[in-house]
Image 1: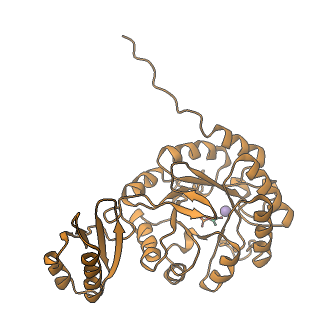
Image 2: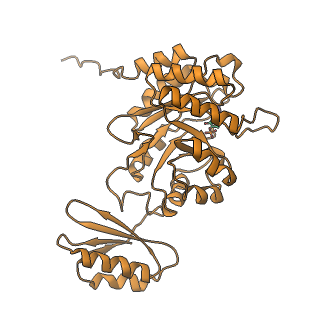
Image 3: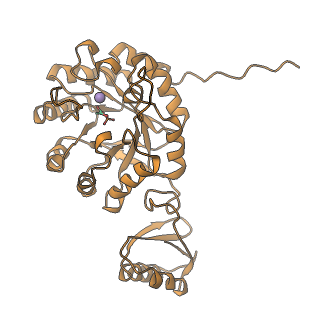
Length: 339
Ligand code: PEP
Ligand code: MN
């Protein structure tokens, strides 16, 4: 439920409504606008009848039900777009940002070379997996803490904040010591204990969309983070299961536009996992920004043919540099109509 306070509501009246919302068994989320304050009453254990009586409280203009199931993530309660600060880089502002780096951190020299190269090309954040969710238990699983140490060194040298995946609740504290942003992998989008733990983490979260999750399920996963106290959440579209083996996934551009309609949270597009195919990544990067994405996540490896994971979709440094240079190429203009 949204409690719209009237324009002239006093601080005392606002505090009273907050108290009453809590007494009714709901959480109160206060959003102070320039002209008026609105208060969201959210939760599943409250007494709704008592809450509705707040209509009569002094300073209350109107009570409006929130129709979407994602209450805090949705735009009904919060109209302004959220901007998430990741180690000084703002995601969700006027400009898009680029997160680039290898799928996995493999060696010290590999990640340092990648970091220097993507930095030179204009990337804003460095990615690299230390803990890898692999389909087969026989595939490279990541270097763990050693990789986190290398990532730290790469940040010290280049200044790029670090985005890296955390796969289990036990690793959250450790990974938070090294990372500027914690990635929830697609396979973990509905790992509810992990989401609950990350809701209490002191780092922003990059929440990837599950390979078969609907947009609403994705936003409800984000709702776990916001309702648990972490408002620094960025969504990441990375493709959904499709039927065409030519492409690893179906990169869901419409989901980016739709999610922008539904949520105030920033959205990053990952055309690397979204397509699994190097040759189409530049085109999909431009398309994603045109669809409204607030940034890109692109896998870049100094030597893709030697990559221990996702080599087939990784760009080498010259190709990534070219992609960055061509990002602002104008879309085609319409043909002139003959009079
Ligand atoms: C990754 O970013 O390397 C990764 C494993 O992504 P996803 O969880 O989207 O498959
Ligand atoms: Mn990968």
